[in-house]
Amino acid sequence: MLENLPTVQGDPLWALLHQFNADQRDHKIDMLVGVYRDETGKTPVMQQVQKAELKLATAAQSKSYKMLSGNLEFNDHMAKFLLGDGAQLSDQCTIQTVGGSGALRIIADFIATLSPDAVIWNTDPGYLNHRPIMEGAGLTVKPFRWQHKGGLLDIETCFKDLENAKEGDILLLHASCHNPSGVDPSLKQWQQFIDFCTAKKIIPFIDIAYQGFGDSPDQDAAGLRMFVEQVDLVLVAASCSKNMGLYCERAGVAMVVTKDHSQHTKIRMLLERITRINYSMPPNHGSAIASLLFSDPKPWLAELTVCRERINDLRKALGKLLAEMGAPDSFQAVTRQKGMFSLLPLTADQMNVLRDKYAIYGMLNGRINIAGLKQDQIQYLASALVEVSKV
Ligand SMILES: Cc1ncc(COP(=O)(O)O)c(C=O)c1O
Image 1 (cartoon, protein in one colour):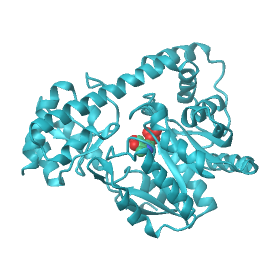
Image 2 (image 1 turned 180 degrees about the horizontal axis):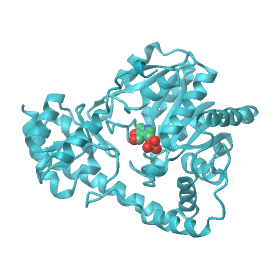
Image 3 (image 1 turned 30 degrees about the horizontal axis):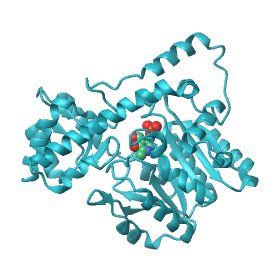
């Protein structure tokens, strides 16, 4: 068997991270990994999470198995957080998953079971793991370009690439804070995607991994909620990794929303069967913490606001400096982008120069994590970007 082992390509992110750790320069800047960092460079445990953990440690009565669909209280809270208190809440079937990635895989298996020939239309550039997760479930993935024109999504180009999408195909969209570009649709553009899906009978699949990192939890879910209001079937994968800082606890949900309530029991049974054959049931600790946060959300939401505002302040300060330094317009879009990521308009060669000459580490496709920055590094970064853009 082992003679058939392929050489699996390592993740380029980890290779760069390794290089960053070995870099001896004091002024080095790590904008690689997709985790939130505070002004001290740490990825903190939220205070409310710590409080919840203490409470759970003393209250735990049993570690007995939970349900195949995980923590039901958490699932209800998540459904409300994602969809709001509107009438559509009764349309959803939600199960807990192993983080957002687990949700993506569960929904991918759901699609592959019911509609194996459906093509998944995926943004290009897109989240690095979307394609392998979808293909891992046996699905076919095709790209459509996701780029901005003057800071706003160039939706005409999206539709040009989506011309060949056919009835029953899946349109995979990021609810907010697009990874890696930070370019999100406006409300008008969300409506255009809805009209497109309705006209062509395409099924929307919304990945929401950064709710609360863009404008606010409600605004970041606005496109998703518009879809759920107007379209009969919506697939959703959600993560608590970023907005609760629960990365390693692996809390998320897979949700199927349909107005056809007669299908709900069958949908739940299928979702549960998929979890059973994958990993039986998800871990409880993260979802138990999340449930406590949801039961008294104000203090947690205040902590989330601090994270969001820090990122938005960094974006504003960087954009302002770049404008003052006369950087090309394409760099200044950083202020209009949302969430942790931006895609610098630099080639792989220029990203190499940024790393080798200036000790600034981003992905070779230009992706940087804005949250990796500290206020006192903005000036240095802006000057380096202006210099490198001339190379
Ligand atoms: C767009 C997107 N979806 C899903 C995920 C997966 O989230 P999780 O870490 O909860 O598996 C990520 C994580 O970076 C992401 O950026």
